[in-house]
Length: 156
Length: 93
Image 1 (cartoon, helix red, strand yellow):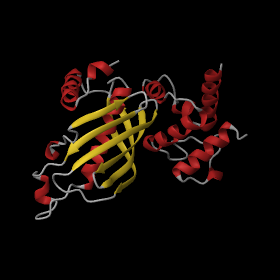
Image 2 (cartoon, each protein chain N blue to C red):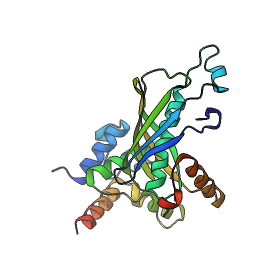
Image 3 (cartoon, each protein chain N blue to C red):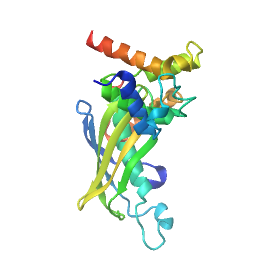
Image 4 (cartoon, chains in turn cyan, yellow):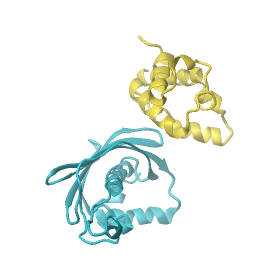
Protein backbone atom coordinates (compact mmCIF):
# COMPACT_ATOMS: atom_id res chain seq x y z
CA UNK A 1 0.00 0.00 0.00
CA UNK A 2 1.42 3.38 -1.02
CA UNK A 3 -1.08 5.92 0.18
CA UNK A 4 0.42 8.94 -1.53
CA UNK A 5 0.17 7.16 -4.91
CA UNK A 6 -3.29 5.76 -4.21
CA UNK A 7 -1.87 2.27 -4.59
CA UNK A 8 -4.17 0.70 -2.03
CA UNK A 9 -4.20 -2.98 -3.00
CA UNK A 10 -1.16 -5.12 -2.22
CA UNK A 11 -2.57 -8.32 -3.70
CA UNK A 12 -5.80 -10.02 -4.57
CA UNK A 13 -6.08 -13.37 -2.81
CA UNK A 14 -9.42 -14.48 -4.25
CA UNK A 15 -11.10 -13.56 -7.51
CA UNK A 16 -14.41 -15.25 -8.18
CA UNK A 17 -16.25 -13.72 -11.14
CA UNK A 18 -18.88 -16.48 -11.03
CA UNK A 19 -19.96 -15.50 -7.53
CA UNK A 20 -19.09 -11.87 -8.19
CA UNK A 21 -16.77 -11.76 -5.22
CA UNK A 22 -13.22 -10.61 -4.69
CA UNK A 23 -10.81 -10.40 -1.76
CA UNK A 24 -7.73 -8.26 -1.36
CA UNK A 25 -5.08 -7.78 1.26
CA UNK A 26 -3.42 -4.49 2.04
CA UNK A 27 -0.92 -3.52 4.69
CA UNK A 28 -1.05 0.03 5.91
CA UNK A 29 2.48 1.44 5.67
CA UNK A 30 4.27 2.39 8.82
CA UNK A 31 5.39 5.63 7.22
CA UNK A 32 3.74 7.91 4.68
CA UNK A 33 3.56 11.65 4.00
CA UNK A 34 -0.18 11.26 4.55
CA UNK A 35 0.49 10.63 8.23
CA UNK A 36 2.33 13.92 8.57
CA UNK A 37 -1.01 15.64 8.38
CA UNK A 38 -3.33 12.89 9.53
CA UNK A 39 -2.45 13.51 12.29
CA UNK A 40 0.76 15.17 13.53
CA UNK A 41 2.00 12.93 16.33
CA UNK A 42 -0.92 10.51 16.00
CA UNK A 43 -0.86 8.72 12.65
CA UNK A 44 -4.21 7.26 11.57
CA UNK A 45 -5.29 5.76 8.29
CA UNK A 46 -7.81 8.32 6.88
CA UNK A 47 -11.34 7.02 6.61
CA UNK A 48 -11.65 8.33 3.05
CA UNK A 49 -8.72 6.14 2.07
CA UNK A 50 -10.47 3.12 3.57
CA UNK A 51 -13.34 3.94 1.23
CA UNK A 52 -10.81 4.16 -1.60
CA UNK A 53 -9.56 0.69 -0.64
CA UNK A 54 -13.11 -0.66 -0.90
CA UNK A 55 -13.61 1.16 -4.21
CA UNK A 56 -10.40 -0.24 -5.70
CA UNK A 57 -11.21 -3.76 -4.49
CA UNK A 58 -14.65 -3.77 -6.08
CA UNK A 59 -13.57 -1.63 -9.04
CA UNK A 60 -11.20 -4.36 -10.18
CA UNK A 61 -14.04 -6.85 -9.99
CA UNK A 62 -16.24 -4.56 -12.11
CA UNK A 63 -13.41 -4.42 -14.65
CA UNK A 64 -13.16 -8.21 -14.66
CA UNK A 65 -16.91 -8.71 -15.08
CA UNK A 66 -17.05 -6.17 -17.90
CA UNK A 67 -14.02 -7.66 -19.65
CA UNK A 68 -11.82 -4.58 -19.22
CA UNK A 69 -13.92 -2.64 -21.69
CA UNK A 70 -13.95 0.55 -19.64
CA UNK A 71 -12.85 2.27 -16.48
CA UNK A 72 -15.13 1.90 -13.46
CA UNK A 73 -15.46 5.34 -11.93
CA UNK A 74 -16.68 5.62 -8.37
CA UNK A 75 -19.78 7.83 -8.53
CA UNK A 76 -21.64 6.94 -5.36
CA UNK A 77 -20.96 5.88 -1.77
CA UNK A 78 -23.84 4.84 0.43
CA UNK A 79 -24.16 3.82 4.04
CA UNK A 80 -20.44 4.19 4.60
CA UNK A 81 -19.31 3.27 8.07
CA UNK A 82 -15.85 3.51 9.58
CA UNK A 83 -16.09 1.16 12.52
CA UNK A 84 -12.63 1.38 13.99
CA UNK A 85 -9.44 3.38 13.82
CA UNK A 86 -6.66 1.91 11.71
CA UNK A 87 -3.07 2.43 12.73
CA UNK A 88 0.07 2.31 10.59
CA UNK A 89 1.27 -1.25 10.04
CA UNK A 90 -2.20 -2.79 10.27
CA UNK A 91 -2.94 -5.66 7.90
CA UNK A 92 -6.33 -5.27 6.28
CA UNK A 93 -8.53 -7.58 4.27
CA UNK A 94 -11.09 -6.18 1.88
CA UNK A 95 -14.01 -8.12 0.48
CA UNK A 96 -16.11 -6.90 -2.40
CA UNK A 97 -19.30 -8.16 -3.99
CA UNK A 98 -21.00 -6.92 -7.14
CA UNK A 99 -24.73 -6.76 -6.43
CA UNK A 100 -25.75 -5.82 -9.94
CA UNK A 101 -24.06 -5.23 -13.25
CA UNK A 102 -26.28 -2.87 -15.18
CA UNK A 103 -25.87 -1.20 -18.55
CA UNK A 104 -22.89 1.08 -18.06
CA UNK A 105 -22.99 0.95 -14.30
CA UNK A 106 -22.54 -1.45 -11.39
CA UNK A 107 -23.72 -1.60 -7.80
CA UNK A 108 -21.38 -3.12 -5.23
CA UNK A 109 -20.85 -3.55 -1.56
CA UNK A 110 -17.57 -3.92 0.26
CA UNK A 111 -16.13 -4.24 3.69
CA UNK A 112 -12.75 -4.07 5.34
CA UNK A 113 -11.53 -6.19 8.21
CA UNK A 114 -8.51 -6.36 10.46
CA UNK A 115 -7.56 -9.08 12.91
CA UNK A 116 -9.64 -7.21 15.45
CA UNK A 117 -12.80 -7.32 13.36
CA UNK A 118 -14.81 -5.06 11.07
CA UNK A 119 -13.13 -1.83 10.06
CA UNK A 120 -15.36 -0.35 7.39
CA UNK A 121 -18.19 -1.03 4.98
CA UNK A 122 -20.06 0.78 2.22
CA UNK A 123 -22.31 0.44 -0.77
CA UNK A 124 -20.60 1.67 -3.92
CA UNK A 125 -21.88 2.76 -7.31
CA UNK A 126 -19.65 2.69 -10.38
CA UNK A 127 -20.19 4.15 -13.80
CA UNK A 128 -18.24 2.59 -16.65
CA UNK A 129 -16.34 5.21 -18.65
CA UNK A 130 -14.43 4.63 -21.88
CA UNK A 131 -10.68 4.22 -21.46
CA UNK A 132 -8.97 7.48 -22.42
CA UNK A 133 -6.77 5.56 -24.86
CA UNK A 134 -4.97 2.30 -25.63
CA UNK A 135 -2.04 3.35 -23.47
CA UNK A 136 -4.34 3.41 -20.49
CA UNK A 137 -5.47 -0.14 -21.13
CA UNK A 138 -1.82 -1.19 -21.21
CA UNK A 139 -1.31 0.60 -17.91
CA UNK A 140 -4.22 -1.40 -16.50
CA UNK A 141 -2.53 -4.62 -17.62
CA UNK A 142 0.64 -3.61 -15.82
CA UNK A 143 -1.30 -2.62 -12.72
CA UNK A 144 -3.13 -5.95 -12.82
CA UNK A 145 0.12 -7.88 -12.88
CA UNK A 146 1.29 -6.09 -9.77
CA UNK A 147 -1.80 -7.02 -7.75
CA UNK A 148 -2.25 -10.57 -9.04
CA UNK A 149 -4.87 -10.14 -11.76
CA UNK A 150 -4.33 -11.34 -15.29
CA UNK A 151 -6.08 -8.73 -17.39
CA UNK A 152 -5.68 -10.90 -20.51
CA UNK A 153 -7.57 -13.76 -18.83
CA UNK A 154 -10.63 -11.61 -18.26
CA UNK A 155 -10.50 -9.36 -21.31
CA UNK A 156 -13.35 -9.39 -23.81
CA UNK B 1 -50.55 -7.17 -9.10
CA UNK B 2 -49.19 -3.63 -9.45
CA UNK B 3 -48.97 -2.17 -12.94
CA UNK B 4 -45.60 -1.39 -14.45
CA UNK B 5 -46.30 2.31 -13.98
CA UNK B 6 -47.22 1.90 -10.31
CA UNK B 7 -44.07 -0.07 -9.64
CA UNK B 8 -41.88 2.46 -11.44
CA UNK B 9 -43.60 5.44 -9.82
CA UNK B 10 -43.18 3.90 -6.38
CA UNK B 11 -39.50 3.26 -7.08
CA UNK B 12 -38.99 6.88 -8.16
CA UNK B 13 -40.90 8.23 -5.18
CA UNK B 14 -38.90 6.15 -2.74
CA UNK B 15 -35.51 6.52 -4.39
CA UNK B 16 -35.66 10.25 -5.06
CA UNK B 17 -37.98 11.35 -2.26
CA UNK B 18 -40.52 12.73 -4.72
CA UNK B 19 -44.19 12.85 -3.62
CA UNK B 20 -45.89 9.88 -5.27
CA UNK B 21 -48.97 11.88 -6.29
CA UNK B 22 -46.86 14.23 -8.41
CA UNK B 23 -45.62 11.36 -10.59
CA UNK B 24 -47.84 10.67 -13.61
CA UNK B 25 -47.46 8.62 -16.79
CA UNK B 26 -46.85 11.91 -18.62
CA UNK B 27 -44.01 12.96 -16.28
CA UNK B 28 -40.60 13.35 -17.85
CA UNK B 29 -38.14 11.88 -15.37
CA UNK B 30 -35.51 14.51 -16.12
CA UNK B 31 -37.42 17.63 -17.15
CA UNK B 32 -40.47 17.32 -14.86
CA UNK B 33 -39.20 15.32 -11.89
CA UNK B 34 -35.66 16.73 -11.86
CA UNK B 35 -33.97 13.36 -11.69
CA UNK B 36 -30.32 13.59 -12.73
CA UNK B 37 -28.30 10.87 -14.41
CA UNK B 38 -26.69 9.75 -11.17
CA UNK B 39 -30.00 9.39 -9.34
CA UNK B 40 -31.34 7.58 -12.38
CA UNK B 41 -28.73 4.85 -11.81
CA UNK B 42 -30.40 4.06 -8.48
CA UNK B 43 -33.77 3.98 -10.25
CA UNK B 44 -32.41 1.76 -13.02
CA UNK B 45 -30.95 -0.58 -10.40
CA UNK B 46 -34.32 -0.86 -8.65
CA UNK B 47 -36.16 -1.34 -11.97
CA UNK B 48 -33.67 -3.99 -13.12
CA UNK B 49 -34.17 -5.84 -9.85
CA UNK B 50 -37.96 -5.47 -9.75
CA UNK B 51 -38.49 -6.68 -13.32
CA UNK B 52 -35.49 -8.97 -13.76
CA UNK B 53 -34.25 -7.03 -16.76
CA UNK B 54 -31.31 -4.84 -17.75
CA UNK B 55 -32.36 -1.42 -18.97
CA UNK B 56 -30.08 -0.64 -21.94
CA UNK B 57 -29.02 2.74 -20.61
CA UNK B 58 -25.79 2.89 -22.61
CA UNK B 59 -27.66 2.30 -25.86
CA UNK B 60 -30.32 4.86 -24.99
CA UNK B 61 -27.73 7.46 -24.04
CA UNK B 62 -25.84 6.89 -27.25
CA UNK B 63 -29.00 7.21 -29.34
CA UNK B 64 -29.95 10.47 -27.63
CA UNK B 65 -26.42 11.87 -27.95
CA UNK B 66 -26.33 10.99 -31.65
CA UNK B 67 -29.72 12.59 -32.25
CA UNK B 68 -31.32 9.27 -33.21
CA UNK B 69 -33.84 9.48 -30.36
CA UNK B 70 -35.25 12.07 -28.01
CA UNK B 71 -35.13 11.87 -24.25
CA UNK B 72 -38.96 11.77 -24.30
CA UNK B 73 -38.84 8.37 -25.95
CA UNK B 74 -37.06 6.90 -22.95
CA UNK B 75 -37.70 9.14 -19.99
CA UNK B 76 -41.38 10.06 -20.19
CA UNK B 77 -42.67 7.47 -17.77
CA UNK B 78 -45.37 5.97 -19.99
CA UNK B 79 -42.70 5.41 -22.64
CA UNK B 80 -40.24 4.05 -20.11
CA UNK B 81 -42.90 1.64 -18.84
CA UNK B 82 -43.68 0.48 -22.37
CA UNK B 83 -40.00 -0.28 -22.90
CA UNK B 84 -39.86 -2.14 -19.60
CA UNK B 85 -42.88 -4.22 -20.68
CA UNK B 86 -41.11 -4.93 -23.95
CA UNK B 87 -37.95 -6.10 -22.18
CA UNK B 88 -39.97 -8.30 -19.82
CA UNK B 89 -41.86 -9.80 -22.76
CA UNK B 90 -38.62 -10.44 -24.64
CA UNK B 91 -37.18 -12.15 -21.58
CA UNK B 92 -40.13 -14.51 -21.20
CA UNK B 93 -40.59 -15.18 -24.94
